[in-house]
Length: 472
Image (tube, rainbow, N blue to C red; front, top):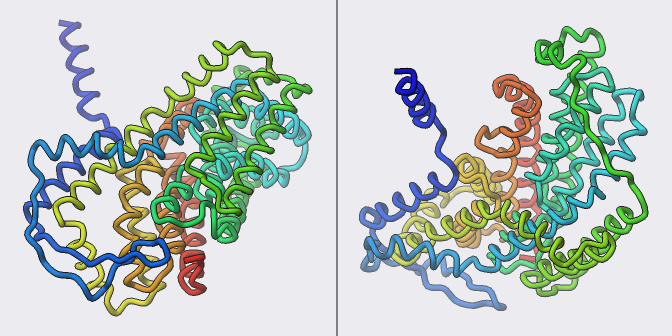
């Protein structure tokens, strides 16, 4: 009887489980296939201008639709992986290489060395800590690895007389701010710009402004909460958690920031510098970025005296950790292929253009930004969301008279900010579980950061539309 009850409880728990990102995308694939039977086929005439495919806004005509067959629904998935192979390789290689770099402890040791200097200092050192934790995601686009920093953040916050919520803010929220701004993030802005043919990482000044604004927001709200705690520890929103944690704080052993780890960090900085140079000079970023990370892999292996087997063991572990993201990208592309091959996507674009016929460029850009927010609820992966949204929004941008750079900025800023509040995000759920914080309490804290960042991002999208940020 007890066994039966246990099985029933387990079954109920599984039934209540929120669908994974891949399950949601499979549902969207089926929805896209259904739409091919409902929405009539349409077609725009496309011409190539200066190497770019452009849509003639006055050329739309209805054509015979080609609803997706059962076989086409399933074959769209492998075709999706073929069409996005460069993105998939990018994710696997960068994810694997970053795992090797992270395993050296160089980044952790460097952060710990700097953070030690804040021990016992005033809470006004918080902006510096937030800045440190936001740099890696904005440059390299890796955030899930930040789970390893959560205990360090919590320990640091408590050493300053604060609580675990502050520890989450200076790691997870700071990392989320860096990821969303994506100064040289290959997974969101890199993918989006690659899909429309923009020079990789162009329009960087807008993302630098985003980075600054997001950091100010995280710092301000964290300091406001910290000042409240300094007045009275009982003001903590997780006072019960802090009471239980007394005497049993997280113990984090940090590696020494020795010469080897300094060389590892130097190789990463040189590699990132070369990637930026590659971007500014119009180099082949689709092959260049993975190549640079593979070179970093070799250098790190030599510096740390890892055997070849050890290097690729660690590389394989890292690549395994991002396979979920690769699957999301391939499956997400299937949605676009189904709509495109059936002639449905141009009809959707035509309907959107008609609705936005009298809308200004700023309003059109803001609607794209809102679509990014909505899409983020269904697709957590930045690269996956860009793969779905950008090909649809791109021709709308052309016909609405806004630049492709604005389209990418709107889609990416809208699609990345929500990561820090989504309970389905592995980083969010993992971090609050480690710190024993209830999601509702975390949401109460982070919602202010999210809303502030969203307003700042909307302002930047408007600026991008007004100044016609380029190169095109």
